[in-house]
Length: 206
Image (cartoon, rainbow, N blue to C red; front, side, top):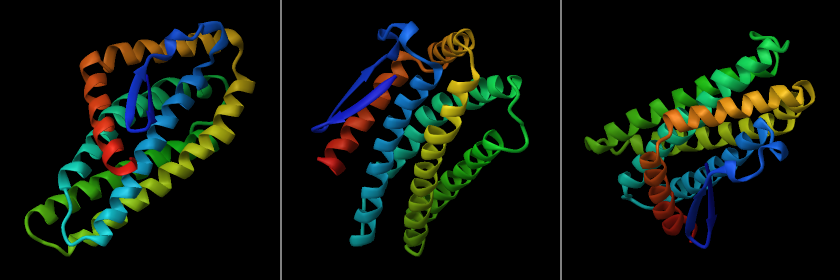
């Protein structure tokens, strides 16, 4: 699935429309990174909005968290950890050190930032305005971490994967990624994410 933002419009397109012989497993994940980078831009803009105003719309931030959980978590992260990372480990990558270990650790840190953000939001909603700063810091920590994380995957892990995996292994891995998406990312979820991103993109990115 690919979300593209242009002038406030989001379109969801399944990458399977590209001939599979021209597409690698890492290409699908790279496309999803573009969608996540769009979300990071929205979240960064929300943090600026929060910083400049005495009050803000918590609902928008909660929409971002929903996108993180459904799209970045249930969809993208599981594809990386359960399929790509597992495939690379079988092909000789070390599980407990090196790029796979580092990137898996960063997934866990990102989850902690999201959990801390959710907790800060709940305290803020209960009337504790002191947690406004925690909300901002958790947003920015998440945005920074995931931005750097995506660059590591793009410039290190995915390049190594493309060199290591044979064409047959790429095809098998791509098929596994597509099957996982079909099983875990329903059309209903896709439509829901599309609408959330569309709303937030129009509002915060213009």
